[in-house]
Length: 257
Image 1 (tube, rainbow, N blue to C red):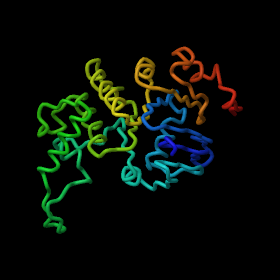
Image 2 (cartoon, helix red, strand yellow):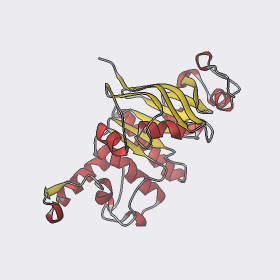
Image 3 (cartoon, one colour):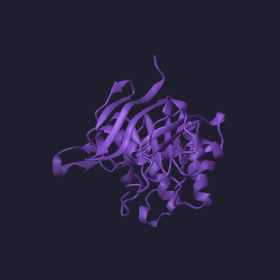
């Protein structure tokens, strides 16, 4: 049985005459943590939007968990087991932690349309289990998100992925707006996911973070994959050379118009 959890073949996205992503062939194995790097406009976000159902590819195949998938929206990807922590976090400021984790996925004691009754006890217990799984420490889960620090908010968004037993976690610049201590907390969560054998895709500009946390680095430039590097075979300067175009791996050599 293959240990490949995610594979894309010729994944491509065009917006009219703009080729935002062309021919992305990518694989992710069970338990592997892969970083995606590149300058702004390199195609990283476009690639992730195809994986998560935010956009539908122009062409290409997406194979996840052994099946070819055609995600029409983020709910399709989420139902398949892909949980994403976007930079915007997508949290409701006026709701507490359990309400945010179960927003759109509420557990009901009784489901009768407008007379439905939520099972707050079950949602609270599942929230605590999700926080424990990722070693996230939130002093009071009944606090609203509005009253939490940036680091706590980010941790809540990450804990949401663990609560629903995702098969793949994608994090888009999870520490970009955080301070040193909060960044360390998020990085510890990523290490916890690694220890649990859960695969992860990390989009980051932070070279130190990437080299510390990931097994492999995939570089995008001008809408194409230009490098696929094992961490042990590269260093920061080498990665930067691929990001800037000073180097290209032979198998990814192409003419950029």
